[in-house]
Length: 250
Image (cartoon, rainbow, N blue to C red):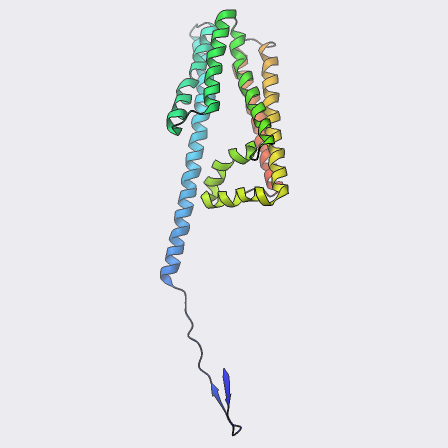
């Protein structure tokens, strides 16, 4: 409302109001479609991630253990059964290289350890040497994880990228990574988690060596796998608790 005074002392009142605009159906529809597309993409990424984890468990745990005990039940010797179970990893490693279209350093390292352990066991004639290969792998992973503490991007920072993208997309990933440059507490928490992961991998390597020389060859594959699953479950539980407690979730 405006008041227009004149020289005669009178006034006129302008009661006209600005036109009000209501919600735009087209804009609301576009926004709803965008949200639905983003949700569908997040579900697709989550599904793909779960499938990848499932395939990894199948080729790295289920098939090697199942093939070993299956061959032993069929009367195959310990050495040959261990070699065959180790070779079950080769198709999975090759598939990863073909799918990613690049040679993964860790995959190549794991493959080389399988070959080296097999050759050493042929020289020594001891199947226990073959069982040591898993200790070498987890020890190397532990050392590498701890080594990333001295870099700009520690292990947890890089390994979490796929999960962050699956949850919030590329834009959310950029925002999450930007916290590294602006929040000292964020950097501290990621380094703590990296240290814990590296320490657990090294502990697993030590315990595997102890098991190799304290239990029977036939008991080792299942026992070491159950031990690792228990340690991994505890580690993931701690990781999720720490992430939630310190506001690291996306």
